[in-house]
Image (cartoon, rainbow, N blue to C red):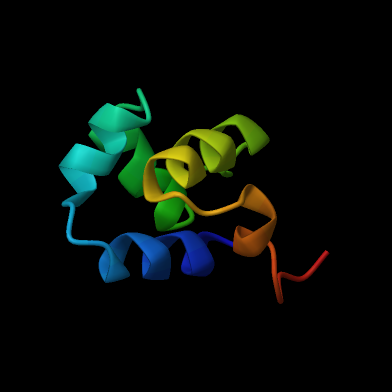
Length: 65
């Protein structure tokens, strides 16, 4: 799932800092979650997806249970 979020952010013209700020998530925390240091929450997916205009369910496509 974190790989899908990372790919979506990389495909967007905004920087990680911009996405984090728009999603109201500390940039260090978001980076840690994307790199496996902590789990992404549903709230994270909703916030990031809202900024990127991606349904949160898309981040879960292909993710292992």
